[in-house]
Structures are given as structure tokens and as C-alpha cells.
Length: 258
Length: 258
DNA sequence: TTCGGCATTTGATTTTTATCAATCATATAC
DNA sequence: GTATATGATTGATAAAAATCAAATGCCGAA
Image 1 (cartoon, protein in one colour):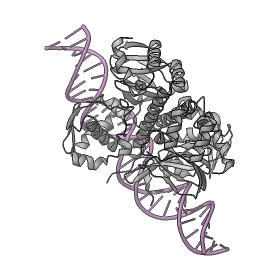
Image 2 (tube, rainbow over the protein chains, first blue to last red; image 1 turned 90 degrees about the horizontal axis):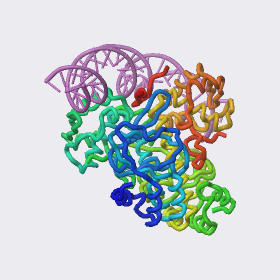
Image 3 (cartoon, rainbow over the protein chains, first blue to last red; image 1 turned 135 degrees about the vertical axis):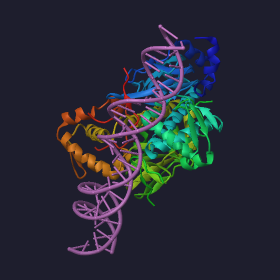
Image 4 (cartoon, rainbow over the protein chains, first blue to last red; image 1 turned 90 degrees about the vertical axis):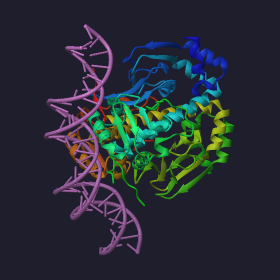
């Protein structure tokens, strides 16, 4: 564990409020490690031995079933992931792999559980972090169930622009096949959808996104605070692919009843 | 607030561990109320003023966007819902309506937040509840993204059988159009899918489900602990429609890479 | 620089799923 | 009991999205 890592971890919402000595003790038990790109850090189903903190690089959370898998989120620095499994001392529900060379902190989940039982301020931080994660997940599920793929893509593009500070142009933070999986569609479908959206106010050139007509795109997307955020507080930022600097209904939805 | 309601609330995982006087104080501020069927209890976007506890009846959590809406979960007694919004003092992400005549407890979220700040045992309970809710949501998202509609239906039918004690036959706990929306499909599609599944070991007669060939159905479903549960601990039971007593890939999945 | 691998794109096609319309069933109100 | 509303089913069609196959473009290694 490098001493210069500590302040960065300490300022995380999750660790910011806890007692000094508890933070020290927890970090004492933890260790930092560098991993190469493409390494599987966690396999779903394994016991949750460590809370992970991304200091540098990025990590993909993905899920597998039968012979398929899909991207659930991408975690950027500085954020934690798989807190819930650690809290419950239950098997991980998702796997994790590095997308690039990454530096992580591993906090033993047993120590974590022990500390929040004795540190009310830390307990409150854990509560806030979990609530934020939960709400992120709900937003995600809403987007999947209420929007079709074109709407998900368009809202994603607009949201990224906002997160980067309402910029007109930005670079996609992840490769497209991963984005496709995150958005619940195939790479081919994403590619075609991006092409189709050029008439709706956004142009894609390789990894670069250019908002050519924000008003038009916004009208199409109908961004919704309760899906696209931002949440008034932004505890669990860093999760869900953020960080860059007359349409058919989607499956399982029904017309609103009066 | 009826005195006879208190023990039932007290035994909930969320309230079980807290200090006696805190429980008393919290209940003092809360009130019970009966609602008719079909009443909208909560509208998404509203400030989270109350934690809700279902004592009798059932409540649908649903989400709306544009002119569509979809069922996110159904809550049965005795369970709480929308804890996360109350914790964060943020707008509800979901709406709620009674499905039948229901009796609820409303706990003011301000008092709730105040209490868990001063009661470590309660804080731990909140942490566990939120972690359980989060994991339920992750399972949900995994099912939506990794499975196609036939697989979602089949796994749902099998899971309900398990929850009822591995029974061969049971009654669907909700009407089919709601189930369809919960599973992310149209009622027509659900109807057809149920019919198709008759060759795979399950027969549907009205609201009654009969497992005719459990082995066959199980082989089709490939039930997965990390999607279908059960979670080792069952804190947030009652949510997600439980309580009853060579197939194409689904959207956005990709073949597993080696 | 060339090569090889991989992501992306494009096209053709199939499968899945939604939509629309109509009928049937069931339950409730009168 | 009959009428009516609502949910469920069925059939025909259309749209969305996946699949398969091939071409293109890009990047890093040799």
C-alpha cells in the first residue's frame, strides 16, 4: 500500500466520514495491487472476500449465464465496487475484469463488516453508498424496460455529453461492443442505430461523438431525471459508464392507463 | 396505529434489532392506514416522505416514462418498500399502487434517518436491507439482459414453484398482464409463450400452474443461484413477485469469450 | 512497413417480439 | 339472470432486433 494512495481513498464518500483510527486500521489490513489489462479479478459465485477500490485504470463488471455474458457496468477511478456482496458475506453476483492496466485496493470484507458495526459514521456512509448503488440499478432497469434500443443509445449519448459538462463533442469512454452489451443490444444493432441517429442531431465519427443538434436530440430522448439522473447527491459516481471527462414501444411496456 | 400491528412490524428484519425505545419512538411518529384497491400511494418524482410497510394486501411498484409504464415489483406482507429514497431524502424513482385493499404503515423518513444515525443496530439492519434490495435488483437486471422472454417465463414459473415449497401445482400470485410487464414482455407474448411451454414440462390452466415434467423444465431453465436465488439470507423477501404460498440469445448478450 | 488480429461496419436474412384486431372467458354490477 | 367491463387468448401482420456472413478499417507486433 503506497502512502500516497491513502488521501485519495480517504476522500471517497464511503471512507470520508469514518473515524481516523478505523480508517487507519482498515487500510492496515488492505493492500494495493496492480493488474494487467484483461485480468479477471472476480468470478461471479465466488465468496466476497474483498471490497475493491479502483485507483487507476478501469474495471468491467459483467454477468454470465448459460453460454452468454453481458456488461453490467464499468467502474472508473476513484470508486468502489461489489460492496453489497461484502456486506452480506454472500457470493458475488457479478464478475469483474480489468479493461486496462489498473491499480486497485482490496479491503478484506470481514474487517469491513467489523468496522461499520463499531463506527456509526462509517455505517451511515455505507448506508448512503448502498442506497445510491440501488438507485443506480433501478434507473438502469427502468431504462432497459421502458426504452427501446434507439432510445437507450440516444439517451446514453446525451447523458455522456452532460456528464462531460454539456460539451458538444466528446470521446466514447469504452469500446462500442462493450457499450452495446451495456445497453442491452448487439454490436451490429448499435452500429446501425448510431448511423440512424445522424438524422436526429448526433454524429459519430469513430470514437468521437458530436452533438449537431442538441434540441432535436433532446426532444427525441425526453431525458428524465428519474432515469438519467443526476441524483441530487452523487455518491456512487464512477459506476455505469460515466466519466469522460412516433416511436415503437419497448418490450413489456404498456400504454399508460388513465 | 393498532397495537396488534406492532409485533408484526417489530419482527421484520429491518426493525428487529433496534433498541426498544427507538422502535417505540418511531412507531409513535408513524401511522397505519387502510387503502382501497387501485389507489396510487406514491408517484415517482415526489419527495420521499414516508417509508412504507405493507401489513395486508399487496402493492405494485411501477415506473413510467414517456407514455409507457412497467411493473418493477409487487410487494407482499410483511415487507417494506422504497427504503433507498427515504434514506437519501431523494425523489422516489418508482410509483406505487395498491393491487387490492391494503393496510400499510407509513414511517416518516425524517425520523427514520434520525434514528439510524443514533442506533448502530438499526443502522446495521438498514445496511443489510439495502444490500439485499440491491442484490435483488441486480438479479433482476441479469435476468432481463441474459435471458430471452421464454427463458424468463420458464424460470419464473420454476422459481415460484420452489418458493411455494417445490410444489407441483400452484396459483399465480398476480394477474398475467402484470406478470407480463414484470417480465418485460407484452400480455400477448406471455400468453403465447405459456402455451409454447406446455411441451417443456409445465401446463397452465387459467391461474393455475402445473409442473408436469420438472426435470425437463429444469433442463430448459438452467436455474442459476446467482439469478434465481435464493440468497443465503432472505432479508428482502416479499419483493419481486414471490410469495405464494438451442435457443436464441437475448438482446445485448454475446457468446462467452474463452 | 507489412502483417495479422480484432473491432466495426454493412448487407441479407431469420427470429423474436410487438402491434392491431377480434373473440372468448370471467367476474362484477345491476 | 343479464349486461358490461376487463382480462386473456388467438390470429394476422409489422416492426424490432438478432444472426450470419463478409468486407472494411484500425492498431499493434513483427
